[in-house]
Amino acid sequence: MIPVSTAKLAPGDFCFIPRSDGKFVPFAFLCGAQGKKSYFYGGLLDAVVEHASTDELPPSLAVKHFALLHIGCFKENNTPIVGNVAAHIGSSALQELESKTKEFSVGAISSVWGHRTIVKYAEGVGT
Image (cartoon, rainbow, N blue to C red; front, side, top):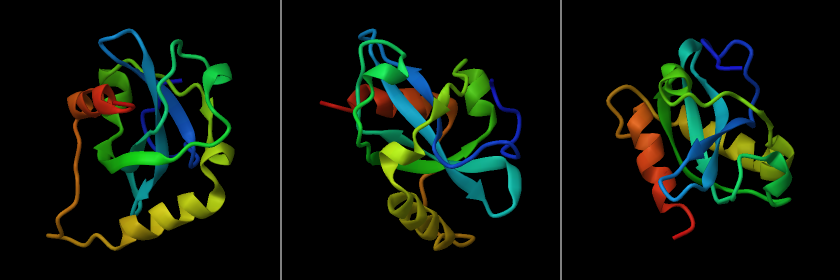
């Protein structure tokens, strides 16, 4: 499923971002952005896998980079949601990240990524 809003997404829902070397990096929905259905906080996870398969993911994952994104990034990158890795990340880590996103106020410096930026940062995971 390629989401068109955050309404049906749950923390930990993820897709695989393809890299130029043929490998994949998981990218997870972390939380919504203060009531906005078109914006959310998402993060690249600290794993690189050979195939876009949940079977290859390690039992424990951490968020390597996170940012504010538009829901259109899934469509632009043709990256459907393939599962949920909340249990791999851990509920306390997800709650901590959600708390961090609430600290950002209007005018605060925070990372905002477009669909190309996700791919750019995925290239650097694991290197």
